[in-house]
Length: 59
Image (cartoon, rainbow, N blue to C red; front, side, top):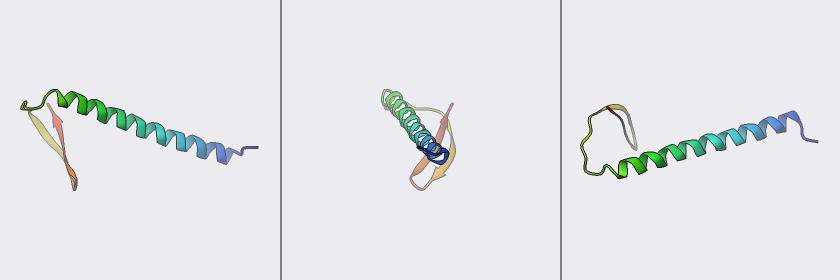
């Protein structure tokens, strides 16, 4: 018999997998979109800075 705790842990793990898959699909679509825009100039605002790069919000 599966306990409520096990059910909860299973649901939480599946939710984490779903969130990761959603993030990956958004990143893929961003790369697909921007790959067609190579060489173009955009106007944007730096919205964040991290050790590995910057975040820019395009206008």
